[in-house]
Length: 206
Image (cartoon, rainbow, N blue to C red; front, side):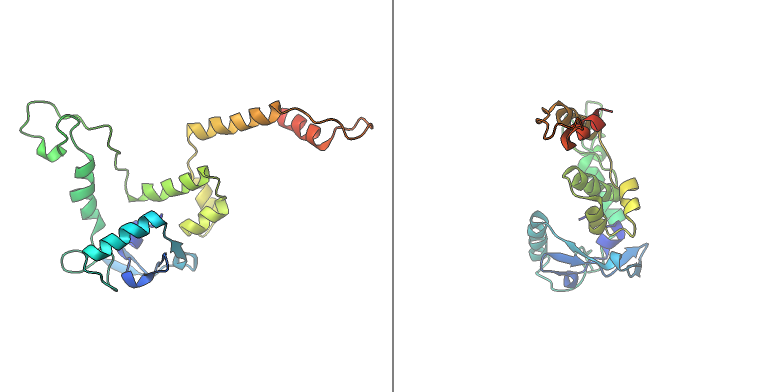
């Protein structure tokens, strides 16, 4: 969904309806604040795969209708920094030989080497940047990506949240190559002036 870490921590079940999440607060260092802008309060659509997992999570929590979506043992918002340190990173940093967590690797007969088949953790914000980049590769316009990420300015989206990979560059050049190689249709007049397609193709080559 591309939410900020504080927004994830502040999610409430009462703000989740009709496959959309309405951001009403953000929690940072234990302090709850409201979204600063109208765009920050915009509803965020929930894709089907996430909706299914949220329903499973709700049932495991006793089917609550209100309160934090991600709560600790006493019903308070889960501290995501602790979740990252105690759960996420240990689960990803495991030995490539015995498949054990790095912390459980002390009494073994071989040197610890991280399992490269498991993705590395790049932080909560990486998921937000990744969403922007993946949507861009799918052909979603920058203005729409801005609305999904709820940025105040599309230039922020383009500059910091859309990452062009090497494959993107190669694909772009391949599209140009294919366009230039297309046959030029017959001229539609005898004036000697290039047709629109011919002029476009000449511009592409230049």
